[in-house]
Length: 209
Image 1 (cartoon, rainbow, N blue to C red):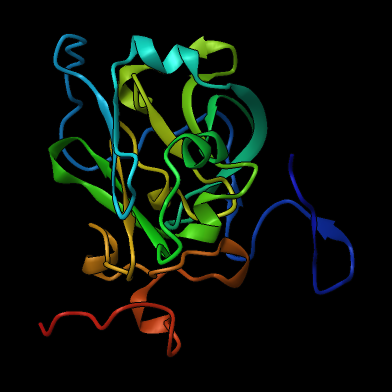
Image 2 (image 1 turned 60 degrees about the vertical axis):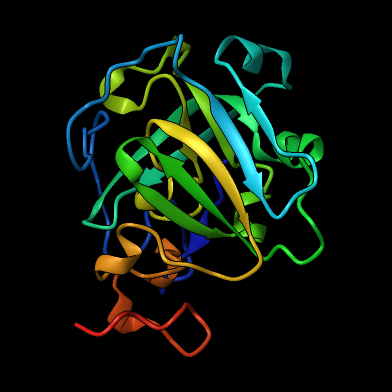
């Protein structure tokens, strides 16, 4: 579902402030595209839970699936619209592997040690998916095959490709881009792009330069 937001003139807009609409789906990532080796691949859910799990790629088919149509906003400016994602709702993961009551955040871990931190409330929205398909086709390698976290209401760096683990946290920790100057929360409608914009309480203290 796509939510329209009012502009300064009072008319609804799907494009957040400071963004520009682009056609297609630009490829953007840091580092090389990993090779999928199904015999070695698993998705791990761990951290502050008494029900840690590991799933093979084939075992993920046994979890609930749904389709979400949403836009994708890159913090560098492009917005592409009407992406049809298919995959496992984050709420299903939370149901099968419940976090302890003390959990406030999650860390989404991807290949090569890449990580993105999220507030538990952002991970738990009905639109957040562990996506396997895009527009009716399996994800391509460049766009995150075999599994990509999709958090459409935040900037794209909170939706890491090549997802490998979800870690439940009892306190916030910054992920890869969040340690390198990007905003810890990343709400595109608030233009929360960079860490210098953060207000008290938005995130952990950045390490000294």
